[in-house]
Image 1 (cartoon, one colour):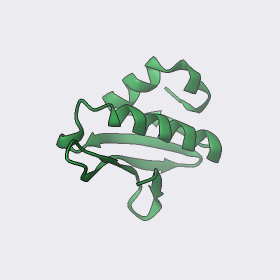
Image 2 (cartoon, helix red, strand yellow):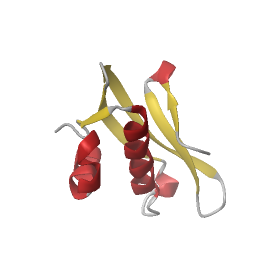
Image 3 (cartoon, helix red, strand yellow):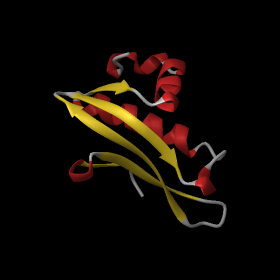
Image 4 (cartoon, helix red, strand yellow):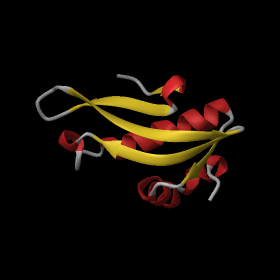
Length: 95
């Protein structure tokens, strides 16, 4: 499943295949503040943990923000740490 913005739920999500080939979700709940998306919580299905899916999701999220002219304000510890470790996305990050 491709990355998508489910605006009605204020959630970004993306599906990834687990070890058994079943599609599981990684998602981020957000709040809207103008052109900024405040990332409140990022969660990966337990079957995806350790697979790199959450990092791939964060990269897709940062690319989406860039293409849509959005900023990301990470309030979630995981999102904050990931964005801090990837300076190539500083243009879309508000710490």
